[in-house]
Length: 250
Image (cartoon, rainbow, N blue to C red; front, side, top):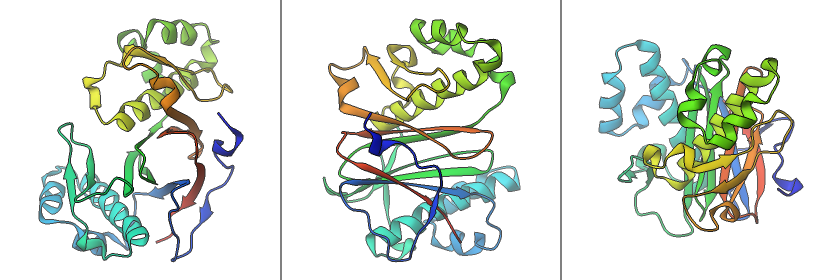
């Protein structure tokens, strides 16, 4: 991993005329608690998105879904110079959204959220995936790793001191999730068929894969720093790009 891919220590405030050059990958950080913008966000959603929002049983889930989709549309509208409500999405057979009529060099995106915090990733002409998780030590103590991680990852995780295993677990989980989201195949891609780094302080990396020949060299993996209590990772196609991190300001 080259130095230019390292996540910056701080998230910058953007300007309204922000562009997305082909050699850059942008990740936005935003809170999903946006009470002042919820009505405006909801108005930009398509009828099917509005219907999906209404199906959530709990109000906070409805609000967070609305904020996530509204933020996605708002940021895309900056890059594409279109009204947020005019954007149309399609969905792959695995449910991954994309811009309808997308061109090979068009804007691609991915979004993840956990515990009220969202990360939204954007690039031109290259696939990418992002994942953020709120660290819960109780989950790391369960046998999830033994069920879903590769044998090499389980061995690396259990070799860590007990006090570092929660961090190692969520390093592994977010990196694996970001990779399968970048590939766009969802959980049809077995999680134990590829290995990622996980030790605290170790660079994020896709170490090897038994899924596709040379796939480990096709993708770049970056550890993101979303804030205290969270772990996150970004996976991007290719290595000829630079990372910029932005803080949403409503």
